Length: 165
Length: 128
Image (tube, rainbow over all chains, first blue to last red; front, side, top):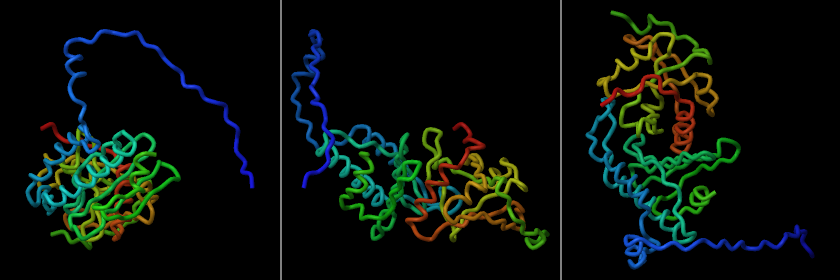
């Protein structure tokens, strides 16, 4: 049975010719360096965010005077593993890195991963208790929503799809 | 000595606001983070603006200089799922009120993000 399909015009690739410019010595040196960046390389922007967020590990118990607990290295490492694994997966699949979230202290020793974009927002919470699932909620400030829980040690294609939409 | 029962429990109108302290740990580059919203015994303590100024809320912290103050419009909070804001006066704080938060972590995560969106910083952090 035939399926209805709009006929599209053939799209031709435009070939832009740019004027050749000579490389400076510094550029030439960079060009000659081996390009051995593997797909598993950590996004520098993500690494900077992780480095900054690491400060939360130095907080003492009751850091806010209201009894809040410390943030453990184990929880932090699980949050980092989730981010780096998903970032590397996206990079190896599509050749680009997903947006970098803000990594910040969550409630009760948990860690928040917060993506705040112009057209969507997503909050993932990595729990202090490793036996608990991570939870997430996101929306496009309108009718599209995503909510649920997942094991942060496994790939979550729903989260990846949301990050790349 | 004042007794909490001396203060009548009142209905908080939607148009009013409540204040809440936000510790400096919950700020990054001057911007609030959603971690500021957390439950203690199922609810979040706030001060009704009918009986508290922003500065009074700040001064109730153990270390006021480490805290900013944020404001939430009660009607905006009540529009988030089933959240409610209840007046729960205490002996030493007539303004004391509570926002009931969901028990489910999934629901709480959603509510925290939605509260984050309606929060306004009314007293920023003091410069370090």
